[in-house]
Image (cartoon, helix red, strand yellow):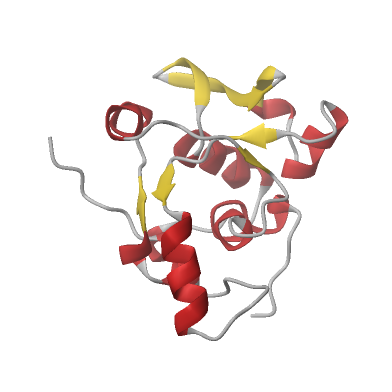
Length: 145
């Protein structure tokens, strides 16, 4: 089955806690009934009630290095190519602006059918722009834009 790639440009960046929680349910591995996803899957913690979270930083109260699984497939080699092309050494700024660099899923079923889920720390430098776009100010990061 072919998957239509979502663009981060089409993702509504949350402005409220309710929208933040909605995007956790949409773009990150979660647990629960598909009609009522109510827990974020956090490695080494297992599950966290989404309605108890007011920001990604709340996860630090549960584990010193929380890891989550975004529903996105990307390759570090593509990050390196982007960095070389844009003359960046310590940054991958702009990598997430080009949807050819990743495949974003809005369905966990599609994601797990096509990709082996991977865990990332919530302080992952490469994914910070992704976190900002999908979780807004609730990601714990700010942008210069």
